Image 1 (cartoon, one colour):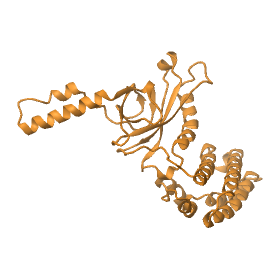
Image 2 (cartoon, one colour; image 1 turned 135 degrees about the vertical axis):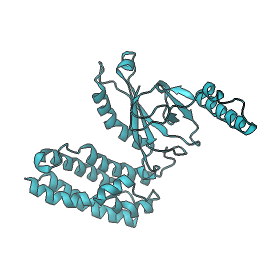
Image 3 (cartoon, one colour; image 1 turned 30 degrees about the vertical axis):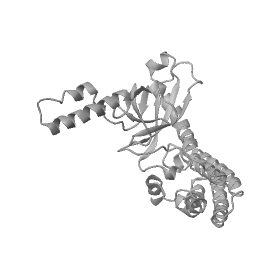
Image 4 (cartoon, one colour; image 1 turned 90 degrees about the vertical axis):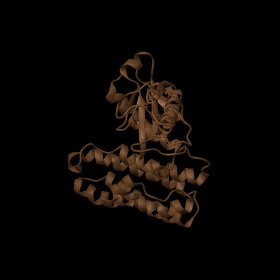
Length: 294
């Protein structure tokens, strides 16, 4: 299978190679070498085929960068690790191998949504953790492989513990489902052109999708009690109206006028108070903060 990710850890040293370090050295050196050999043996024993990964598995890759990988090191989640499998699915809509770009496009679309089911509060993720995935290659597809394994992987360093959400309250789930859907509508419908003038229909379609997601989010918020939840409802009603205005803009100038307020209205910083009220994470992720700071 192929990994689509900018980072993978270095291949681990095998027990046999580690044992070569034990020679005519001092006791301390021999002891260190033995410990290294034991670590290497443990790593080898933990190797598992990427074709047998399960949701919830915590692991360390054996290669660095994008490319093909057949084995990873499965580790207990309470040990430091690089990634965790958060979802998997089969590509059943294609009979022949559709090509690397097409497979990646399918994973790009489905993995973020699947990952949100495993860990709905993305603000609670360790810094640097992002969605990655393993996909079939031309060769593995020919053998019947159709599986995509979605992961949360740290681009640099490791993290400890499982990322799976535990015991979320109904109101927390409702809020997160609505909030995540709004941002998914925004980014998954992002037009390729940077200028509205170059693709006004595309930007209007994006605005329509965000407005629809906000309407659904507002329906959920209606069932959540709390002072801050009430304040957010009031604000998002205005914001949803601005997105709808943008979606119906007659020209680029009209779109810009509506979009400025609409985009500002979903600034994640404006949700910190309600998140605190609901007992959710309250630190805006660095990548999101950077987008709205600009």
